[in-house]
Image 1 (cartoon, rainbow, N blue to C red):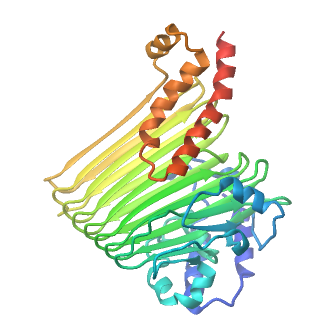
Image 2: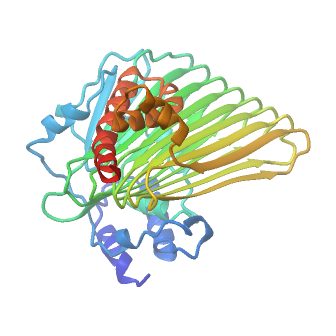
Image 3: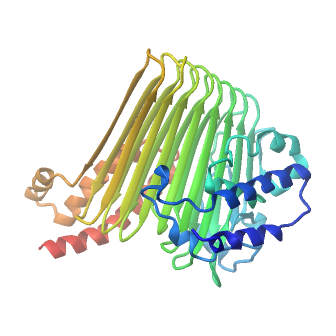
Length: 441
């Protein structure tokens, strides 16, 4: 892509605030240098073969400045969750008046990154930028170049956070296209337990770009459940990376939900760096019209005895397109690794399409690894069975689609998210199904 496609970001970076400490300046500088070298990814790159980011590159997104939003409280209330702590961000920056610190166990920190730079600087210097490397990661480099605000979650040794911690990121672009760069760092010390929900949302009709990066470090025996809910507006774009490093005996589970955005891509990579680590990656994407959704996963078994499970399901209608590229790596010496990977897709129209690429790279001989992928349409026999019992055609299709998605929905560890997703599934599917039944008679 031509240089002018990235010049907006290079110019904005030159105007960045210079009041940050030297270590943060160095991190940002490395980010912009790598982004200038890499530019935007091109379809000729294997990992970007099926996702063309030209719509992002050719739109003159301006890095969002601090802004006020009169309706922010109402919109935040719409996406709020019952949680022990809820931090609300507008274009990547914390809005204290909309946030609720809640009652957290002693020693637990849930704060804005900008605030933490003064109070937890050593923690940030040790972990920030360590897991999400900028080397060959186009959008990680761009996010790092504009690293400013976001969230720091620190769970000290042995702490158990009973209620979910909710991070709500709202996009706002009333006048011109803007880009925002939320950054999340989660550090869970030995034997700690927590549930974290990240929600990305915005108003319909606004054109903005979210480039989000989450870094997670789990100490021995730590347990973390992470839920990401992507509900961006239909004119928005979302690219996110989640990087996890797991120590011995740690347990991590991810639940990724993608319902919004014109184009979205989520990259999740977990390094099972300690013996006996366990990781589960689950995902559900529901897209229609001309939406495009892409999930890239990587389970990297570095040490023996690791267990990983992946289950991703997609429902696609209209001319929507989907991509799933799941990768499992078992390193030399990582004996007794146990990895399973499954991707299933349900196409509701002849124009919808999905590209599924499960992949195993095994360099050890005493392992149990499997993968599989399936793409199909609604079972006509099951549909006939329901209709024969007097169930309306649209309702019958909705029942079968809900049953397909339910395997994922039941795994979500947060009741409010599970209920809200079930409601959104019903609301999103019914109009399209009614219209389709009408077309088909």
